[in-house]
Length: 145
Image 1 (cartoon, rainbow, N blue to C red):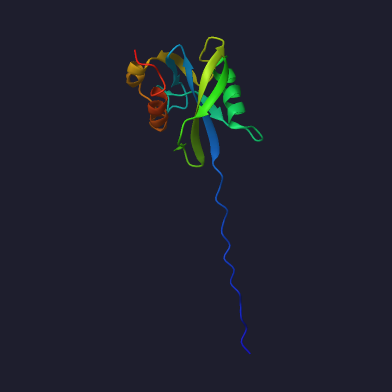
Image 2 (cartoon, rainbow, N blue to C red):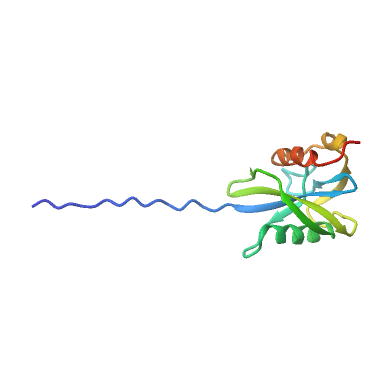
């Protein structure tokens, strides 16, 4: 009698990426750009502001919280910009449009300068690579000047 062994194949679960939400923040036909002050490898480059999704938080809630913390403003989330972009390993960027409801954006955390850009000015700053596709899509929603 031969012994049969049943080999089971276990698959390691695919790790769920940490979601970073960012806002394509619009006001009066302009898009807000934020210049990173940290970490050193990102400092001086521009991004759409936002941050990590916290456990139990929806992406729109995270966007409202992050823009309040980073910029001191209240926003209304809009539609998600199609796509997602890998950041560092284990992190992915997802972008939503947002409308400024109240407050004047100030660089409170992680940024040292903010700029409101019209459609024709979008290429005037050095965007982080992962933000470029979302900025291009967001720019299509801006009126031409």
